[in-house]
Image (cartoon, rainbow, N blue to C red; front, side, top):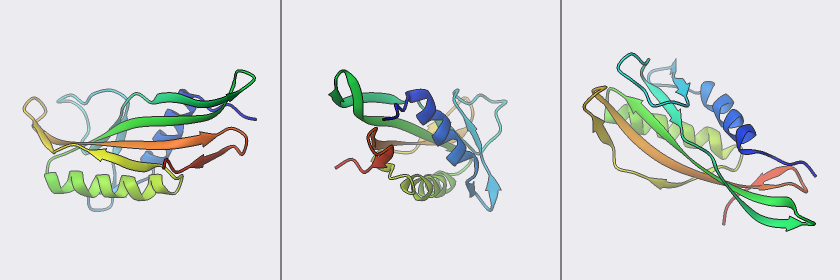
Length: 134
């Protein structure tokens, strides 16, 4: 059995997101901190990964559920929607699915739009694989 940590999950998601091309074929920045007026846009913000241990054997976690948010920031609402769609397509390859979407908000400080999406996946330590959350 292999344990999979929240740090490993965050790193894996970051690696996936850094390779996505969107907004007219450009690669977007990926960050773990809230964008400022000096940040490069468009960008994605990976929220804190939450972990829930679903099943243990002899006090060793054998199944966990991971949940996290991704904020999509850009100049236009349509770009946020395109970025979220591209995020969905790439994360689904690892069985990570979107479970919630917030309304698009305008940030008056950065003067950018922000779309927050929530994702979940279940990790099986016995098979070392990701499973859809049902």
